[in-house]
Image (cartoon, rainbow, N blue to C red; front, side):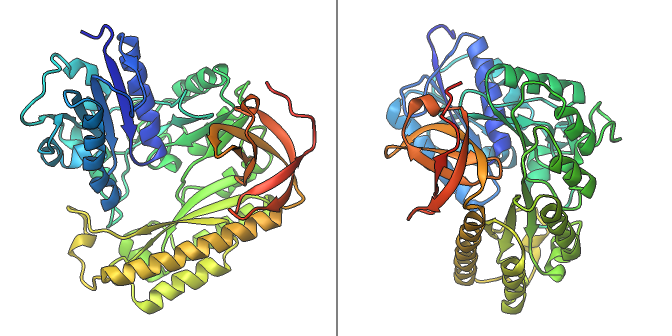
Amino acid sequence: MSAQKKVAFYTLGCKLNFSETSTIARNFQSEGFNRVEFDEKADIYVINTCSVTDNADKRFKTIVRSALKQNENAFLIAIGCYAQLKPEELAAVDGVDMVLGATEKFKVTDYINDLSKNEMGEVHSCEIEEADFYVGSYSVGDRTRAFLKVQDGCDYKCTYCTIPLARGISRSDTLENVLKNAKEISEKGIKEIVLTGVNIGDYGKGEFGNKKHEHTFFELVQALDKVKGIHRLRISSIEPNLLTNKTINFVAQSNSFVPHFHIPLQSGSNKLLKKMKRRYLRETYDNRVETIKKVMPNACIGVDVIIGFPGETDELFLETYNYLNELDISYLHVFTYSERPNTEAVEMAEIVPQKVRNKRSKMLRGLSVKKRRAFYESQLGNKLTVLFENENKEGFIHGFTENYVKVKTPWNPALVNTLQHIKLTEIDEDGIVRFNWIDVPTYA
């Protein structure tokens, strides 16, 4: 059946989803399917969903309509977190033919016996307790960097979060397999690997199907740093209580790990952190930022923050705002709290009105612009290395330095996926940094 059949993919959400989509796509290709872009006509469209925010949920129907415009007879498959949490809801969306849960998504081709359209989506979804085994994934071909999945699931019980319900318990890839995948990625000529997972600092739990830690995240970092051929390793989002000072100090003198950390905070109020059931207080966060800046003064630090959580008064919001304003960080990812079924928070009183949530979100997004600008200004005059992306944006090629400063220069396809030595010179009207070449560009 697969001969000459075309399949296209759309990914919502996090880096982890991108790594899994890429792996699932390679499985299709190994069985003879031809992968095409999502805006092209395909026989099968696979949509990898997210359910972290209401916005991701709402986008699903729009994406389904977009696929059907390309081919009204196409077979549509929904996978991912939203598909696990609300399979029947997705199956009822007009045009959806199949919904696969947390474990079934990795065997998607096993479920495709017939590409005839269904009146109602067919659901194959496990109980989340059955999602207790690990499937390794990594993304290649889509970007100049690869997302390498090292861990899945979460044992934390944050009161606002559905991820444990969508992905199951914390479990890890074996260290041997992570290193094998990292070598495979580097051999494909990809210059940067981003470590990803649901709670990557918990790496090692469930590595061989048990609850014990066979290895720690620090041991993973040490082992990856020794893999030959990797130019850059970047740690994606990691909990502050799991980012140890030992790991920070190792990154500071590492061969491959770059000075960039993304550390969720969620609130600058200890009262709200306790209400969220986060596993740290503000003082721990202070310590991590201070340690990073002490050993890596030019490090970039990104922060996740949730606004509008139940019980967030004006005073508690200002406590968060003022805390972040004073903190030596580089940018914010601002999430507006949205009620999620089957969470503790959805039952909490002191609901923050939506208009107030929107106003606070706008304030923090403005603070993020200010923080990023200040960080970029602090880097002007520095000599850094940039990895260029593969997209032509209005005649310019963009790239990121090791400490995540975004730069641009006139489009030159020969620069794609190359590392170049530059000196940062000025920030343009779009808030992107221009530079001078230190060395004559090399195209390899």
